[in-house]
Each structure stands twice: as structure tokens, then as C-alpha cells.
Image 1 (cartoon, one colour):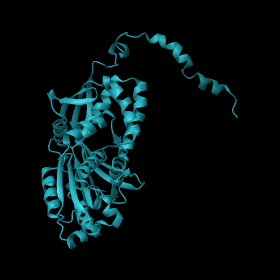
Image 2 (spheres, rainbow, N blue to C red; image 1 turned 135 degrees about the vertical axis):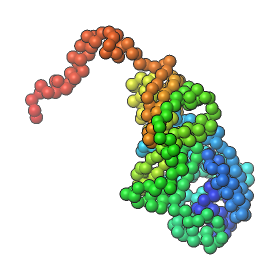
Image 3 (cartoon, one colour; image 1 turned 90 degrees about the vertical axis):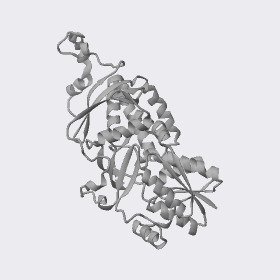
Image 4 (cartoon, rainbow, N blue to C red; image 1 turned 180 degrees about the vertical axis):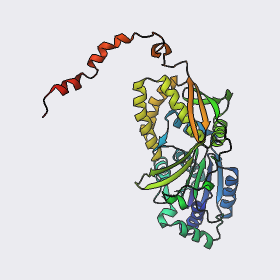
Length: 388
């Protein structure tokens, strides 16, 4: 029996290789999907997988992740309970690549290293079950109900290299970096500076940048056009140097548990802030109000791993229509951990300086009187009625 495992090279997925081999009798194929993983971690994952006796695939999916997932999230202002979706956004792509490899290898088993308490089991299995219903799913960590201490002990017993007893669980991709575990499990404890890598403040003076959007997508920064991966990577570095993108929240997981999560997402914070602001300039009030509901529903579906849910595609049809006019330039100031929009312009702007100005005649303000007479008409009738 051949099993294809979504493999990060970390503790849990590394012991999954051995568990699949010894406890389930599987020949193991590992798949590491590069969605913005550091090069040294990619190399280490490949070496570790082969040392464990697995056939290993490394797939570069950065461009696909940026253009087919991150760009969709920008148009939908994708965020959940106050943070930009990052890990949740990458899981469907990773799961799809695992299924592709399983088909190529003629495997009958799909495997992942998620626990029974987290979100990833939903995200992987939602794709596995909709795209490969004929295959068996094995989740060794969940099925053995292993704690982190038990996983470490198992690794040591079987000579599996784990790189030291790392206190934090970290997931990283182009769009964000999530950190949990260790002292962070105490919601009252301040996050130690050591957990941060992308948002270490090195620039003290404020900096402004101009982001150009076309049909809802960022295409240039300060007049320099770049590909999706390059633009996001550069913005992570530039905004991160100002400490932009640190988020510390109590998050409601899919199963209902509350967890303390820390994120670093400099580019995501900047681009989503700029995109929302530009939408405010070019979309009507009715479009904006309805889109808020659509964006929220889209984000919830993605967070819960329901990428293959037809509603997501239906919501995106509306979102795509609204993005036809989201073209223009937004100026953002980076300063002391904040990204603040300080200017915006667009050929599709619904803003009229002449009409709104207090210094120019513009629209005749006297014409509003008829509207005012009926603005609170029902409330006025209600006040005239005797109290019950």
C-alpha cells in the first residue's frame, strides 16, 4: 500500500513517515509544496524525507499560490477575525498537489500530519474527500492521539532528527507567517521578541510608497512593475522593516476552541489596507455594503477549508464584477508598526471635489430640504403616539 504524505519536514510530519511505514505498512511518498518556504527548510525537508526512506517530491507552486490564491484573497479582502488569511489560503493548493502526486504514483492513501484539535485536518481533508473520494485518508498524529511530548519521545526513540526541542510551531508562506505553541499558549504572556523574523524594526523614519492597482490587483510599487511573487516578497521586506504586520489575537478555530495566534504578514496588511481604501473611492455605497458581507462569507469558507464549495466560486463572480473599476494608485505611509493610507486617486473615482467642498458652490445645498422632511418621518410619527 502506497501513501502520499503532505510533508513539511517538521516534527509531526517526520514521525508520520515512520508511523505510516511501521504502524500502517505503507510505502511512503512525501510531497513538500513550496508556497514561499525558506530555501534551507526546503532542502532540509528533502534530505530528511529521503533519510527516512521515502520517495520525495518538491513542487514549486509560488507563482500559482500568488496569482490563483493570494490575488483572489486581495480582491475579496480576505481576512478572518482580524488577520489576513495565510495558512488557510495555502492548504487547498498543497492538498491538491498531494492528490496530483498520488494519482501519478498510483497510491491508494492520502496522509497528513494534522492533530485532532486544529484546523488543518479540515483543510486537507475537505480537498482530499472532494477530489479523491476513492482514496483512504490516514492522519497518524490524530489517530494515535499523540501529544507534542509524545511525538518528541517517538522521534528520539526512532532516531528521527527534529532539530532540537523547538518551543514554537511555525508555518510560513508568501502571504504570512504564523507562530503558536510554547509560552504563546498563555494568552496573558507577551509574545517574546524571538518569535518574530519578518517584522524586526530596522527603519526609524517614516516611509511612503505608492501602490498601483489594476482591476483589483497590485501591479506596481513606486512605479516599478513586478511579478506577483516578487512584488509580495519585496513588500514583506519593506513593510516588515517598519514593524508592520504583527498580529496577536485570540482566534476561534473551526471546532470551537479558542487559541492564541501570532502572525507576521507585512505585505498582506499593506495591500489589503490599500485595496479596501481604493474600493471606497470607486464603488458605490450599496456595492460596498453588500461586498462586506460577501467578503466575510468568502473568508469564512476559506478559513474552514471549503475551497471546493461551489459558493466560493459564486461569490467570486460578484467580486470579479466589482473589481472592474478598482484601478488607481494608493499612497501608504509606513511608520512604527502601522500602515496608513494617506492618499488615493483613480480615473473611476466617485468623489466630486466640487460637490463636496465647503468653499465652492457645487451642488445647491438648499435642495436637500425636501429629503430632510421625510428622513425621520416614521420616527416622528412614533413619537407622537401615546406611550403604551
